Length: 122
Image (cartoon, rainbow, N blue to C red):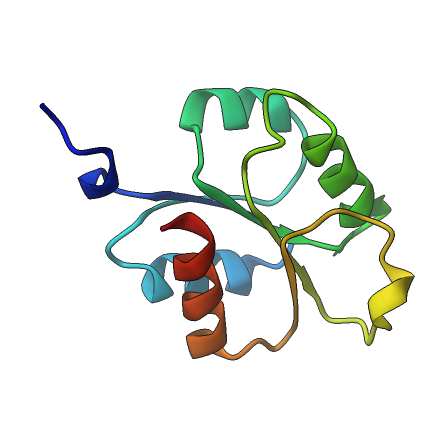
């Protein structure tokens, strides 16, 4: 019988910054990482990829990642998936009316990101 905890964990990175999408797989070499630069077809990507965690940029052009986060957290299909919001903006903790599991400011500390991901998906 396959032990679920031994399954390779999957990270979905959603960010319009190509350098972040290139960096995430390098940080998480022992994970399966999928990076997308747009929320177009996000439901289908999540359904097909079945991520264990989502790293979501807050500012992607005219899209607000907080809105996307709320949609994910309010859906029975995706509510269980931890979401880490990434932002280059300086934010006050109360200024984000969403249900993310964590928030990291860019440029983020790689070790802090690794620790957060490990804590949220193990």
